[in-house]
Length: 604
Image (cartoon, rainbow, N blue to C red; front, top):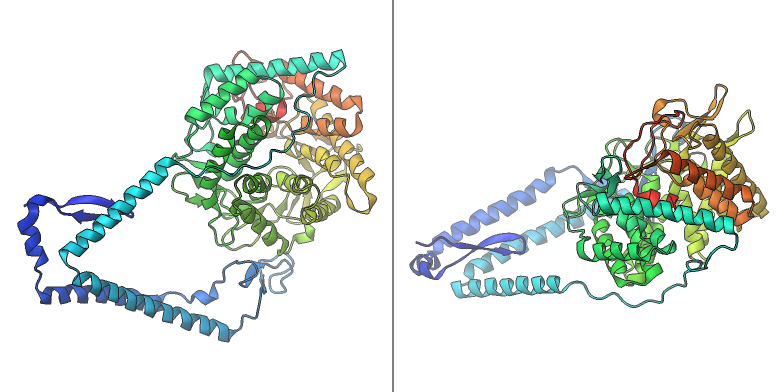
């Protein structure tokens, strides 16, 4: 007797019969009527058991889903009389129509009726299967097999070509050489630093995510999972193009065409992969017009979409590119998603909808904005943590540095990107900045303006390197600010730039620490050893750049040049550029990592 072969069919494996099993199959085909009824009774009993078990499940009506506009929304209530001013009480915001007890009963009855109907349908289908002859069953199998083959052919043929869309005019890419000889000489030096960073990566870490310049080998972190996705290649493409390093750009493009594959079993950071990969690919596409970058960006975006499959639509922090399973960082306030992560998807996803004609990307990020707009905010501030299951804030920690920073940046840039038509984004930005200025921005005893961190109603007088980007953001947002405050925000940007410059100037290496304090007589100086490192970050230089563009005060160019010289002197090694562990030491140790953002942002 020949053993039945196995054939995949819609995710399951079912027996098919080989020719040598004719006597066996004939015997099987002549099942007695009583055996059919026994099989039918077993199947019926199983379905009835499943149906009955439903009534022993918890009452689902007591656990409301966060569904904008249609369902009752469960959100934190900051001023709950039962829990105190900062308690964990909750308030129900009603959507469309009333939600009283009668409606819940009707919904439960409707659900029971649906299950009964499903039960009857399943029994009927089982009866029909048992009535079918061997020929009919075989024909069904052949039909399903043909369908699977057809689906595989479609998959191998690849996705449909993306629709052609007008390319925006890119300003300032090929504006020639600067008129000042001094500026040209300095710019050439920065280009040489970029060449050294790229060539070292090309030689020692090609295809890896990042580079260990001392060990002279590839490097990766958990934000990229266990995959080798060439993060430095993708992240650096637009810088290479802008600097006129077209041979290097071509090398990167060839690697992407031949090797960049997102069908890998890797758990990656949705935020990091969005800004470094989708952002990098879209920028390369807009600069060069090469279709491969657009195609790869869309392929990756499809892999990120499952991260939004949460009860609230707030995406998970991480997603497995192969399985689509998402989760959050274990350290993030009881399984919360992070404001700067789910709030830093908007620009890329809006562009994806523009390029593909697929509205899903736009809908996903607009859902996030609408959800946030409906929520209470303590003191008008956005906490850094939001639970994607409950739609409630985590701990009340607000920062314009890590965990919060780019959420505010993307609101402003969404307005600018829309040619200033997205007034909702602009108002959200203005309201948020007004609350930040009221609660987080202070002047030190020495006259330095700094941005602290709000933690459970208390201001921590510490500013992070990441928060130094805000000087440039305030200047960028000055034009269009309410109540004729343009001059005020340009001045605020200048004050933040000055404070961040002081954080650099008060170190031995003239490079800024990761965080610096403003208390106990210390100002713009790091106190803890684990805050004294510099990892080639761009935020301070970014603010200098914005302030130069808006004011043309030459000191900003000079400050930028001083930072570049310090990086070249203290971070450059034979195998690239490395971060340093202590900016207050004249003989610092290296961290042996050349970050992809050093090429993508700092040198740019």
